[in-house]
Structures are given as C-alpha cells and as structure tokens.
Length: 161
Image (cartoon, rainbow, N blue to C red; front, side, top):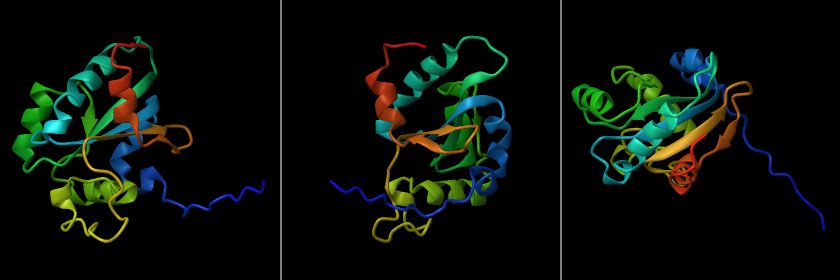
C-alpha cells in the first residue's frame, strides 16, 4: 500500500508562545502542561495522582518531569488556593499573565468549555481537548510526546518511576 504523510502546520516554538516556560524546559527532560481548574470535578482525581508521581521522582540534578499548571480557575485567589492546598510544588503560568495562558491554550486547542468563546476557540475544530488535559513535551526538541498524558497517568497510577 501507499502511505501519505499528513503535513502538519508548523507550530511556533513553545518558548515563543510562552516565554515563562523557558526555565521549566531547561530544567527537565519532559514538561507536563497540566490544563485544569479547581472547580472541575473531572480534575479532582488527576491532581493528587500527578502530585504523587511528581514527588516520587528520583532526586537528580535534572528532573525527568517538570509540571506547569495552565489554569482555568475563575480568579487568582481560586488558583492560588488550589495550588497551595492540592498541587505539587510545581510551577504555573501566573493567573495575571492572561495573554500567555491564553496563547498556550489556543496553541494546543485546550480549554474548559466555558472559556471557548472568550478564547475565540468556539469555531469548528478549534477546541481539541477539554480539561483535565496533560500534554507531555520533550524539553530538548519542544515536540509533543502525547496529548493524552492524563489517561496515561491515571492508567498507570500504581506504577511509580
């Protein structure tokens, strides 16, 4: 049989889309972009599983996995409360950095249903994933390893590093 390769549109580099991610890209092998919110019931079981996996990493100079929270929370206070009470000691794109959070959401087509109109992602095919979504990025190449990290995590929750 003949195979045809689909040409994907070239995406801007992640460091261009979200400059605040640069330190995370340079401090680990894999970057997990965790799209979620504290008000989302489907996110509730994912956060502790991700935290447990994150905290079980071997102590090394360069982490295997770094996590960055891409919030769909309704306020800065809601986001900060969720991060201080439930999340691991990982980073986030600050709530006040609306432009960068929005750029990352649009770049990957991930947002909560109630954000679609505000992010101008309500056209056909613009929103590819809802929340929770975990996208794993190869830090060296900035290529997407999987857009299904949440399912991978929850499916292998008992398997530590």
